[in-house]
Length: 162
Image 1: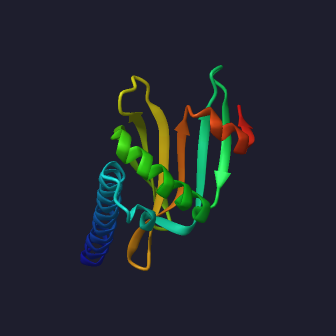
Image 2 (image 1 turned 30 degrees about the vertical axis):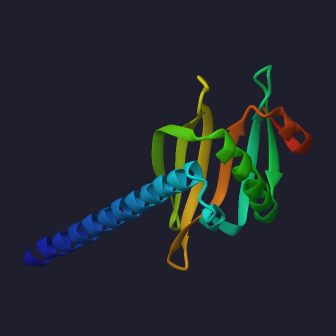
């Protein structure tokens, strides 16, 4: 009987330890997201360092009729565009606020952080998510989808979403 109780105790400790590790990583992923938001809203020149060099970047264009189209780009192109956009954003004092932030474990150390993004001065909110993972001990974005109403991105769209 003692052996059975000992086994239950050991398994219980392993489960509690696993849940605690998940909670710690989930909380770390959320802290990373909050640092990213702060860096983006303060036009931090180190913002590109939040991204993995081979991140999957998706801009999902919300068309006037409500349809959706995806435009994909590589990290290097996105970082170049981001640096140009930051200068304009800083002049316009453009920022985003985020609500309904949720962190979900995808396994293998990956976390999906979903939220609604509201550009400053707008009444609408747009879906966004990022998938983050620790790479060499540092959290990085390995995939990001942000919806946009900027129709100019349609020229880069390669996929219509149903």
